[in-house]
Image (spheres, rainbow over the protein chains, first blue to last red):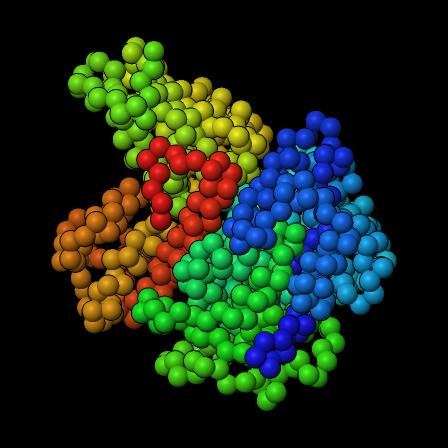
Length: 355
Length: 249
């Protein structure tokens, strides 16, 4: 938990990882992809404050102790949600699998939520594995990476008929939180791999499921916003927004936050550190301190107050994952009045945008 | 013998004599990142540009990540090839994208003038015209915000904006750029054309539709600018050097 100015924040890290991307885990013949992937992640870390940068060797493989210290001891996180990414074509044991996460998490009861994953191209065997994982790890959510390479295919869409079978299975199994992560490739490659239109269709067809679009659809924030504003079960995962912009591009951070608050609303925004890309500590501290600057170009954006930040930092995710939040962290009477309640015009619309 | 642009090469006379590398670089200013709607030069994507005494031009490009989307990367390499080979006096053209997972397919495909689908045999269905047009439409929307926001702030209301033509709007670099993007899409771009149109159909907008249209236009601009910010940061982390013609933002 995090405390600032007498306010207590229950922190749920909605998007984090425990990976091994060191050379010992690279698939022979695919070394350049395994190396390219982790170097790309490492460049993202470069967008955080310099004193939080790691060496590439440390970044490739960090220990359980590192994670526990960075995320829980120093990082204020109460509960962290593992979001596995397999990439088994490049990493022998996978980049970070449900199993690797859970084996580590077992030693720290109550700290972690184990999301699993699926890939519609894995057919019936994948469906069986999904059931097994849910049974074994109690997964209530899954992370989907649509740009994953699989047996010659460079990616897939949520609207693929095979994906709908999996979504139906998720509904049956109570895997209700679908975290969608778009990447640079898809089949066919001439289409825009980052397009979020498929999430729109799936969210309409599966009303019992929640769709959390990670890194708010970046680089398609606008398409994500226009879609999320119409779909009550679509949420914004803030991984990359806070980590990638708050320090490196504060002005764009303000604008992107403004857009998200306007279109999506504070009830549907979820903090995620994307650890180990970025450590949660500076993100939590910075976000709680952050206020929309008093700049005329930002004047028509909604403002956040303390209650907004409490929701985004953890309460929204706790609701989606049925995580028990001690009374002292919950909102009193719907929240503390903020410093910017005077903002004209938007508050009603803003409040109405919640789920 | 090469004529590197960094050495401040003198500009070659027009006609058949080989151009200086500076002129080839100037031609590359016209090549844009389709997603970011900015020249590849100012983004820092051009790492070198040389022209030999015989007119053999070589350009090396670099991108912010190893995994930048291959379709957009292909468009930039292909457009750079066209821009360089179209420069008077250039005899042969080589454009090389470095450090990208699909470098070989892209470089080979562009050099062979093979098109996207043949360069990515079996992985692509069609060419990239539609993708390019989709992103030009986003550029039109973002450009509309750039032109209209100052007008709206100065008190021009939705019905007045809906009635304005391109010729009546105050002249600015942003307006000129908006007209160019519209012309590229085949949308009305003359003085009589309405300032506000639907970028998908070219139809004029009614006053009722203006506020939401402008709201969306602004979001589109914010998104593109935020992406450009991230790309610049990643590129800087990856290479630590400025590209030719790079402009800090």
